[in-house]
Length: 434
Image (cartoon, rainbow, N blue to C red):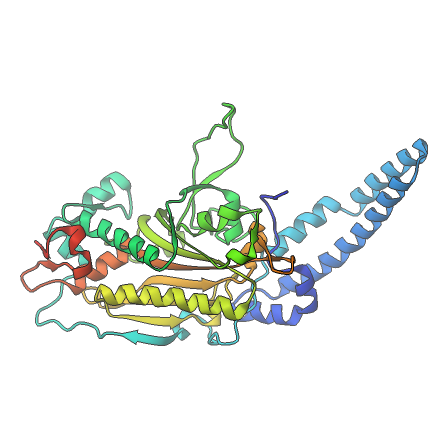
């Protein structure tokens, strides 16, 4: 039976046998390696208590004497209370959720994002014969974006996309969906309002429960109702990407290994509280609370080399789209100090924004191995009939705001218009906006 609150990240047996490697991964990811030491202490006490309780339970099953059975029942209850079963299980779960994934051997060593390594580059930043405008200036002058009324209605970081901006941004999404289908990724429009297990399982909660102080997720305050009409006790959240919804699609299921890898893509509205970005990029639509995105997800067999090859496949598709859109971009391999807790290996794609004079992250491709699959309990049966956890990978196909910014700023003309990239003209219906 599927448990919606599974806390397994790495296998505890693996952690016991490779404690130094896991602690080293924690240190390199700027996490507390002391968590592993405490986990092993709690694990030892937990196993001793479990052994004691299982011994009493075995005696209970063997006895046919009612009085002895009652005595053993009380003995079990007393042992569980004295051993602090509930407390020890909670601490074990809380510690397990903080255990990071191991790190791929080819990941660059580095303390933070400043030491991420550029591994690929396409195109050169465009040089203009005039002073290029940023997307805010272009969007306002061409009546494509309205930040003032967006803030009035939606609050801080609110915005409206208007006029020709609408077919341009929707064309981007349709172009990305079409590319996903062309490349063999089954398209989906997944739920954006989800239960907590999908976000916990995919690693979007830092702990075992939602923490509004650190998790950049919106919780829905309105109480929901079950099919029976009764008030629901389950909390609901808005996703920041289609990834959690896609990964949770097979939660608690055992897949046919012959059907792996499974390639999926999801188009969704995305919501992010951006609490960790207070004071950053406060103007324009570079960093906003809601946007659209097409996401790629792959469920693969438990083979690191094959998983890495699938990750390379996904980032090449992202690169192909940037090239077809005519956007100069670079690919970074993320260093250990900037690598998320659950990630084994990660690449970021960045496009050049001439109006803002900066590189901007337009995609991120991550290989989690079975770190997420253990939390979501997604297994497969291989040819020998053995059950294993799948490996999970994800990648941004295209996000709406930053790619829109890149197109507006790279395709601007001296007279203040915006040329439409050739691959998007069938959606926009014209070659030039303005």
